[in-house]
Length: 205
Length: 205
Image 1 (cartoon, rainbow over the protein chains, first blue to last red):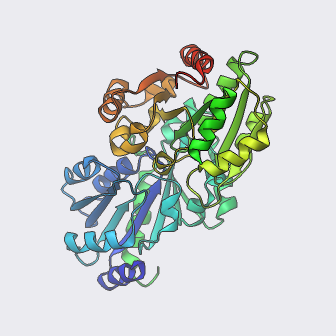
Image 2: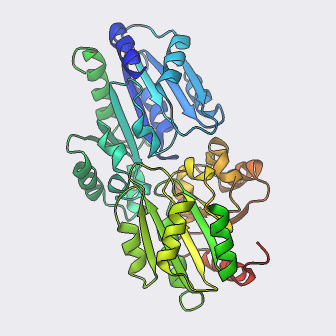
Image 3: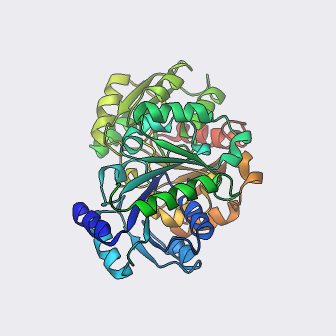
């Protein structure tokens, strides 16, 4: 089903990203900021995953972006069939970008391909610099690593260079962006990358 | 097997806690601080769970506390049979306290009873105030909620009262401690509680 999703995205020129992270690393805040910063430049669609609540979908809907919330109940990750159903309901336009925010979990979602073009792992500076080696599967299977909450570094013991070194040890291909989604720092580089990638669909992925 | 673990703990007067949280919420730092603050007062044993690395066990061993690291590989939680094996290897003394640090995951470990007397969910102020309602199972099945990193509150949008309200909505019986494991704030109350509970084993649990 993941392959089928991927084929569907390719046919429509939809660039699909799977955002994964621990709970509370700032996935939704990053998404909100990205949607605001790229408003009018890229047509976005969003699928939100959480065990419970419509909170995240409500935050995205407030930005006038089409969104579907999937509540997994006891489930710890999104699966490709859920994405298949949600994509049909969203009625996604050609040449758009689909942002899938997975359930906050640095372990299980690593094992489930949703058909995305790129997997983006978000890690907060507050989580410390050792997470990539303690939870290697997620960093190994991701293409992009966004280091969020860099505004808090002055108040923490976290060493960003050590964090990157640990992540590269697990996955030498990882591409990094350092941002503060709430303060807006570093968002230009991330948004530029997103714009450039969206235009490449589907040939280059 | 969880029941068998529990019987074993009860027979030996061992007070067993299962520490659960998101990755990077500060479980190991809290544990280190607790072991230091109660050194000489309570005999501790520790079981560390992580997908990979011996990092956490090394941190605990540096404090001269007997510890076993369990690496779950692709696994997302500790299970009762792993605890059974580890407890035998630790050769736990009577009237001691066993701290089990679970894999960092706010979802899956909620479904696996290890035989513990109390489940302790640690939530960092940096994770925001909505985690209890987005990941209700973990808060519903826990007895204690430790709110860690309270020293960072001035730099965050997190509302501690809202966080507690959300947690109580999911589990009205939750008992809270507010601490900064790195700064030491609030550790006295948590350590006093731990001492009082350790003396009650096994009758009161």
